[in-house]
Amino acid sequence: MRPLPVGEDALLIECGSGAEAEALHGELLRRRAAGTLPAVREIVPAARTVLIRGLDDPGRFAARLTEWKVPPPTATLLDAVEIPIRYDGPDLAEVAALWGAGSVEEVARIHSAARFRVAFCGFAPGFGYLTGLPERYSVPRRSTPRTAVPAGSVALAGPYTGVYPRSSPGGWQLIGATDAVLWDPAREPAALLAPGTPVRFVPITAEDVR
Amino acid sequence: MTDRAFVVVRAGALTTVQDLGRPGHAHLGVPGSGSLDVPASRLANRLVGNGVEAAVLETTLNGCAVRLRCAASVAVTGAPCPVTVDGRPVAWGAPVAVPAGAVVEAGAVVRGVRSYIAFGGGVAVEPVLGSRSTDLLSGLGPAPLTDGAVLPLGEVAGPSSPVDVVPAPGPPDELVLRILLGPRDDWFTPAALRTLAVGTYWVASASNRIGLRTEGPPLSRARHDELPSEGMVLGAVQVPPDGRPVVFLADHPTTGGYPVIGVVRGRDLAAAAQAAPGTPVRFVPVRRR
Image (tube, rainbow over all chains, first blue to last red; front, side, top):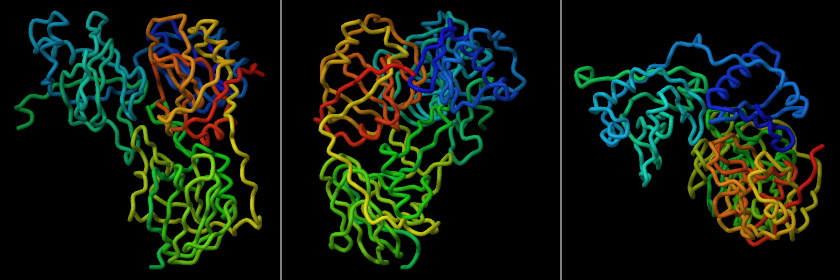
């Protein structure tokens, strides 16, 4: 872990890997819940970092951080959020080819068997970057982004799975769609997926709909 | 026609509702948002007897006009501009008692970019995640004002300030932004760090509430690998592939994948909010306390 100064009152903690950043984020939340973390304004995890804003004394916090023992991310006590999904995205065949999967059904089987966790959010309110697929299933972004990806699209890029909370431009590979509402500011909580939340994708079939 | 509300008569180039923003949701991808010139927004509220957290209107360059459906105290701060009530000039930077049915107008700015209009009771649109601010990046909060829109006002909290008039800010001939280097200054060449400190930049016309874009000498990178997305802060000076620094303002994205060479000190951001396109910009690296 390498703490980097950010402005007057923030630290960016750079971790060796995404898993390490997820573990540190979990530890920060545990310490905040236990009341042993100094007052902070925001804790923002990302791909390989955790940003901590609103520290009274970032230098002192950085020095103490080096003594922390951060356990690896453990099975959370939270129930997994289940996202119903139709594996019918326009890029499904391309993903099957990239994965070396024999068929689109095989992609659906592999993806729905994975246990995901929200590593971090960004891009748009309620857009989670979900990890959990084995590394060999990483896929590149599309060379030409789409100008409009429909809300509810389930998509892959790099090691991540994401669900578009609303229609927006996007360059991820679309493998399916869900009717789940990812973001509703009138709901409490507004975001279905927050960092640390475990997630499963549950296939629905034409019969389920009928 | 005595309900507590106003009707937009002239929305102006871009007028939004702003308060102190919605901090605390960055981990969900929600920008902080809020008034760009926070001291001006707070002052406008104080002048009309509101708490500093009340929502005001933030205009862009050419002001706006509204017809009040109720009598209210109104104050305009931020970028200096002519202020009129039913066409008659009234004071800028002072509480003005506006009768029900009158049109209050903030005109085109004399200098600066954004004027702030506070109303006694505050603009009382429905809050989203604890804030009434319009967030232009993610579309949260009320839409920018349009002609004919009706916006509610809240109940008056207290009397207007007894102050007669506040001084207008001096003309910002040059925008000086003190900057604390990091977290990614080591992604740039020593020459780039020198250029940042001694080079002259200009405010680019593509600037908006998300970021103050600049034109000027490009900053060259020492590292060319891709930076995985990381958390961004208000005032972060992000350097996109064209090498021209962008200063993140209130509606900035919560994460980003271009390196941040440094962070502008919070107290300099109000001046950045008032720097019109073409204004010279100087970045002054300062030491951390």
